Each structure stands twice: as C-alpha cells, then as structure tokens.
Image 1: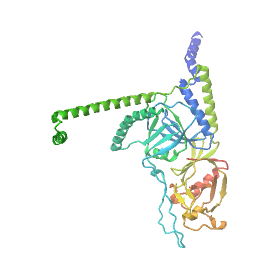
Image 2: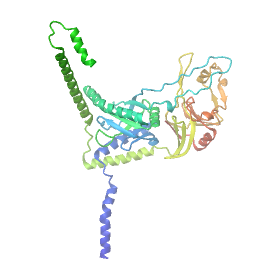
Image 3: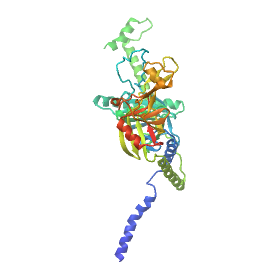
Image 4: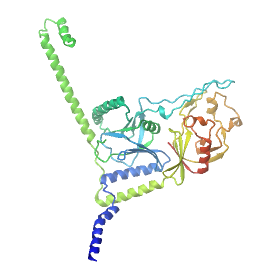
Length: 225
Length: 236
C-alpha cells in the first residue's frame, strides 16, 4: 500500500510540471507576444475587408496570400536576408507603394481591324500577359519606407556564381545606403527574399501596387538568414 | 611599362626652365600621392561601411510590456483575435480563382474539393479609335460573392466587343445579343464579371478572356451545382 502511494506521488511529481506548463503558453517572450498582438490586430482589420492580403512569415519561411483569414496560396521562402533595423511593430499593415523590375512586362494593345464588310483576316495569335511573362526579380517599396527585393533561386553554375557576386555587392552597397538615409534622418530597412522562379513570377503578378502586406520579422537581431 | 613611361615622356617634352625636379623623382611623388589618396579613400570607405553596419544594427526601442499580468492579458487578447479571424473564414464551400495559373478551386475549409482549368483575363488594353475610352481586360482581384446563377445565358455584347472585331457599334439593343457564347451557365460575381462557359475550350489554361473567368462545360456544371447565391469567390 505504501509503495503504491509512493508510486502515485512520484507520478504526480513527474506529471505536475507538464500539467502546469500546459495552461501557460509556451515560453513566449514578451516581445514575441507584443509582435504577435500587433500582427493579429492588423490581420483582423484586413481580414474583415473583401480583399487579398499578404503575410510574410519570416520565422516560418512562408509567403502567404490570404483573404478573410484563410490562406489561399502558401509559398516557401527559400532564403532571406534582412538589412537594417527591424521596424517597430505597429498594428498597421504595410501597403505596396511602388513595384519595379528591370524587365517589367508591358501590356499589349489590341489592334482593332479596320471596319470592312469582309471577315477578320488576321491570323489567330494569343496576345496576353501571362505568368511566364513576369520577371524573376523585382523590387517593391512599402509606404513606411521598407524595401522588399525578390529574386529567383539561382539554377546552374553561372547563375549561382552571378548570385554570389550580387550578394557581395548587396552587402557592400547596403551600408552606404544606410549612411545616405541616416543623413536624411531616416532608417533603411530592406528585406531580400529568394523563392523558386515561378513563385517570384506569381508574386510579381499578385503583389500589385496598393496591396496590403504584413511582415512577421525574425525574432532575433537585425541580421538573419 | 607604357604607363611608367608616360609621365616621364610627358615631363620630358613639356619641361619648362623652372621645372628642375628630375623626372624619376616626380614619378615617385606622383605614385606616393596616388597611394596616399587611395589609402585615404579606403579608410573613408571602411569608415562609411562601418557606420552603415552600425546603423543597420540599430533597432527601435521595443514596446514594453510591464508586468506578467499585462503580458497574460495580451496573450489572451491574442487568442481572442485568432478566434475572431478564424470566424471570418467562409462557412461551407467557397471558390478560389488563381488568375496567374488559370485555375479555379472549389474548397471547403482547408480542403480542395475540385481543381478546374480556366481562362482568366488577358491583361490586354483596347482603345476606342473614336477616342475617349480605354478597356483593360483584367480579371478583378479580391473577394466577391456569387450574385446570380443564370441558365442558358445570352451574352449582350458590350461596345468593346464590336470595337475589337472592327465592327460598327449597333444602335439597337437586340443586335447585341449573342446566345451560346457563354456556355450553359453563368455565375455573376458583380461589376459585370461572370464565371461562365466557353466555345474556346482549347484555350483553357491561357489568359485569353476579357476579364470573366471561363470554364469547361463539365467543370462549370459541377461548380453551378455546388455553389449557391452568396458563396464567396476569392480571386488572386
């Protein structure tokens, strides 16, 4: 009987920390709680409107397209670099103010045929702006000044070599840009994402000027990935 | 060698009676000056780089949460917000349209019930030669609802359809009616846009429409059966 009681006590002793921990949220730092709070407030405001919004979840390496709180598309971020101070969390979404690409696709103008009695003699040819026409690298600027640059994962030896050179140049030029912004009393923050080429094209297609975006920054320091 | 000779030759040809410095010594001075400028430049660049890195590392003061009680309150507020966001999700089936991939998904919760090949807007631009009007053939993006379900729809050709085909715009409304062009059904999502059938099923999967979403006959039939008025349509 005594041994049974001892066993029971031992079980209680072992289980009690687990039970106590279950009620409490996992070791969430106060900063993470505040950041989550701001993000959730911003998302709730966005989800109530009939629109698509984007969530860049850097801790989980996901780029989500959402509407009404549900995820309609979920892209995997292959890699990311962050330059500059992580902006203070606010319950306000960022809005894409400008989007630019070196080889931005151009809309085609439909040539209306001359009005004639006969039928249209033009050869049939699809003229359309499609996913494949979208660039595999682009930059965007948010209303709070944060920059986003997106590039496709390099494939092949040459592309990887060129990508390494670009990374070097990126790290060389970013401090100078930070200095320049400091002179004008602003901070420079840039988020660089790498995704598969098709996903970059899809992002360019979907991330239109005026769209709302939420960014869940990495939890540690300014430098990541 | 050529580079070394250049200042020497130049000084030899342009030597004035006042210039008594030997060419080799002047060459040395020039090199020293260049080296000094290079070192100063490098130091300035390094300093700028260092300052830049320091600036990049600065973070704004994080919002403070004073006390465990406040933190717990915020945690429960977060849980409430998550619930409120989850409550906004569509109940029952809903439609997701991927305009880039030309796909229509019939979904319920996180589950995709059916994936359908579609044709979405071409993104082309048409200008009225008579002037003033321009049309951009994009499929609108955002969240919509099924507003009408029409059987055997008749397409009332808008002005752009005549302009695109180079035909004169008719005066009588009846001349605009074109039955059969929209397939067997049309689902109105507002703003004059429909999910409808097509005569050009071989173009499904391509961006060729004028903004409406075209579907194959069988898929359209399935969709019409599954959705009802008010069903949410999310287009991205």
